[in-house]
Image 1 (cartoon, rainbow, N blue to C red):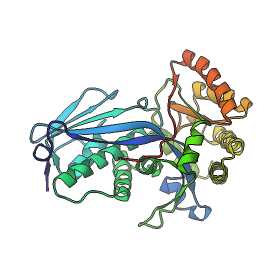
Image 2 (tube, helix red, strand yellow):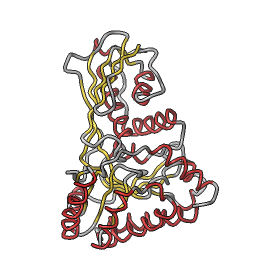
Image 3 (tube, rainbow, N blue to C red):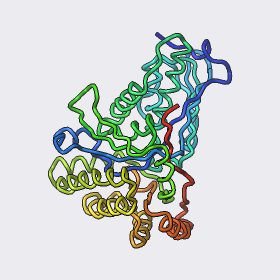
Length: 349
């Protein structure tokens, strides 16, 4: 049954937003890796940050959809019943088509840089599904639960991208906060276990131990992830990935205990292995930033699949302040910048 936006919304429309994230242990949330090695408790740790992606839905001409996204080309208009499921807005059109949304203008804005490896496409998708859920409720239909939004977002992205997507970006966007995720796709009802690592007070304290920087270049994750999965399945990098998983479990425990020196050491350990098994994730800029963090006693790593985008660091506050000064000078030469952000305990809303 179609949902006519013009019949349920006034010109003010409605909106929803979800947070971006930084992460460690990423790629273990992809089932091609997680399923065969379920006995090792594949895990990812991520931290939602208060750079949010907002999706507005407004009424538009009946029978048509209009998509606008800052930093991603010109707006696009197409028939509501025949949107393209290839191209830059395919991930937005797919859920609109699924729920029969008609006569809608969708506007997407993000507080994070475009293609910054902070989970941007996933946060936009989660925010869109939350906005659609609000439309459904206004139309007298049942709203979507958080878990339904999470599972739908994952399946939409995995389907439209052709596979090799994981759940971690959508999970951070839906729930917010600082979490360890244990991935067990063998259970279709609950494909993950969420372990919240810090209280809201602990999450506020963690903000003083973090630094996030945009390196000045955009990233594209699909090609990178595909290579990593192929190398893992072929056995070329499997031992390294298994060690990364063990380190990520230790990182979660250090964060839970607020042992920031121990957590920084875990990031340095992970990066030493990543440099060997995923060298394509590091650019000249990200390598320079990481190399400045480690001698200060901080840990630093690329966000997401790397190859551009953002780098983040963790350490004691005085070390982070020293690193902030060094990164600021370095970033001026890179056309990058520090991101003003903190831990976000609120998920999609």
